[in-house]
Amino acid sequence: MKLSTKLIHGGIEPDPSTGAIMTPIFQTSTYVQEAPGKNKGYEYARSQNPTRKVLEEALAISENGKYGLAFSSGVAATDAVIKLLAPGDEVIAGNDMYGGTYRLFSKVFQKFGIKFHYVDMFDTNNITKVINDRTRLLWVETPTNPLMNIVDIEAVSKIAQQKKIIVCVDNTFASPYLQNPLDLGADILMHSATKYIGGHSDVIHGCLMMNDKELREQLYFIQKSCGAVPGPQDCFLVLRGLKTLHLRMERHCENGEKVAHFLRNHKKVGKVYWCGFEDHHGYEIAKKQMRGFGGMMSFTLRDDSVEQAMQLLSSTKLFALAESLGGVESLINHPATMTHASIPREERIKNGLTDSLIRLSVGVEDIGDLIDDLNQALG
Ligand SMILES: Cc1ncc(COP(=O)(O)O)c(C=O)c1O
View 1 (tube, rainbow, N blue to C red):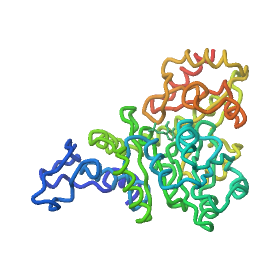
View 2: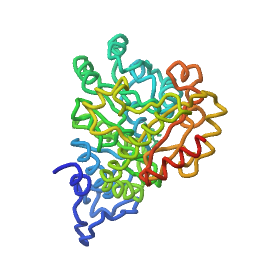
View 3: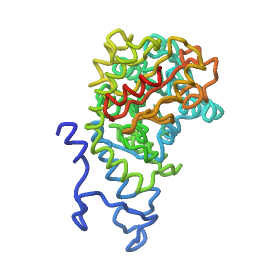
């Protein structure tokens, strides 16, 4: 099956008890057993739920993976991956990534004795330089949030395979429509399904996909033992979102390209970060590993002052000022005070995330209306 067919049909059968074409929401906490240990494969809903099971299968298929595991948020899915590790283990992560991931690593797990190195992963030499006997995991986000840097998943996976290091890719920005990291050699991939997969800004959800059975067993053990599982209603919403991912992504890509070029040609705009520009330093890698460039971008103003940025952030009418991304509606965001506020300022600035940076999640509205909105806000 091709991707668009897989997104609609993958892992989904009509409900065997009624024929319902839509997967039912099994709103139950437990399951009646015939005798102790004699059941229909479901014992307690933290461990198994039929709605979640269908979603996990559909998510795995969307990424050409064998196994999927659903979590109550993207951060909960990331948390499960780090719990594969033990004190003394080391992780190499990108120096430009979602602020909440950085917060989880540096404020929660570091104190349990896990060491994190943050490097610019575009140059893979920066990774090999810090690999040592204790390195267990490479955490790769590509394209990165918010600076749209690109990491070569295949090259990084090759380095890791030689040293038996796990590679986990945060594929949130690309979605399964644009990039499939398992096909490029990654061991695990993670999505904040809150974003493009859910697609309608109405659910918080995360997932992991993988091919290795042993890894799946370890992560399933963490999922049921730590308990950050999504409710069945949320699983239903994510399943519904998945079915239109390809249609939405097509429009996100079309609109994203037009907005990126509009910004680049506007006299009041400074630098535009979008990985579809041929002169973007990661363009060739992006072209190789992605099927399009998406609707995420960030930019600065020519008058690179925080005041001007703040003025713009409160002047758009269609682009709503809000955290999050990947929904049908366009959003505008100020990473320094919103999504990336948990990263210390010096750290942010050192890695190019300035106080005046503005991030856009370009939605699927009419492109003329979106450009008119940005035009009037830029003045
Ligand atoms: C790239 C990326 N990864 C992970 C997350 C965390 O996901 P969630 O908010 O669903 O916990 C986010 C949230 O913004 C994100 O942008």
